[in-house]
Length: 301
Image (tube, rainbow, N blue to C red):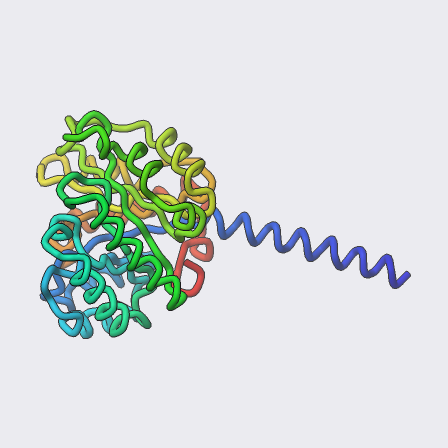
């Protein structure tokens, strides 16, 4: 009888663990990007008024001390999950390897306890980041530093099918040739930055893109790490297209991280695109059968 009880207990435990794993692997993340923290109170109010807990990606500006972001990070910490972009890709080539390492140490040292996910490299396969070996030295250091501190890591790639300047920088080719096996197995998030305006208005087959990335990064959560447009008349169309995407790839979590959130959605009471974004997220939640307790939030990202 005791053996029967033990067997039943183990069966229930296995079913429970498997159910939790499936639930966690399918959780969705809805993100926005803020490229500056001036007027932080209005930003916090806009983010906190979304129905679902958001993930806010802060772009840490070039040559700015980490102390410039302490107030903003502390205020955002109470209302959202925080992703910290260590340095925008546009400025990576302006930093020596030593300077990038020092910046990593400074930012993770001061803000690490409040930043939930560290974006250790942004659009890393872009031609404009400079010498490949220098880029790899920078992102490898930041990755290893974050791992040593037990921080979550994200790597953002740049999708550039048929719009690269150098074929060696095509996203999949660059990743396969340069990303270490350690990163391929252990990055927490692998995200894709994409701007249709910069790539012949191509609308990729995202299902194929993320299925392919899942083969390379089998243990990583996958999603869109940046999107947006400066074309005012197409912003609503873009928001709806990206935030309502229905991707079935294992470990696909969404993200999206609209680059122009500060400009387009703050203050939330006077910017119509705040409502467009809000209802796109609600539609996505309904479409994917994700209820409030299945969204990524602090502690389970």
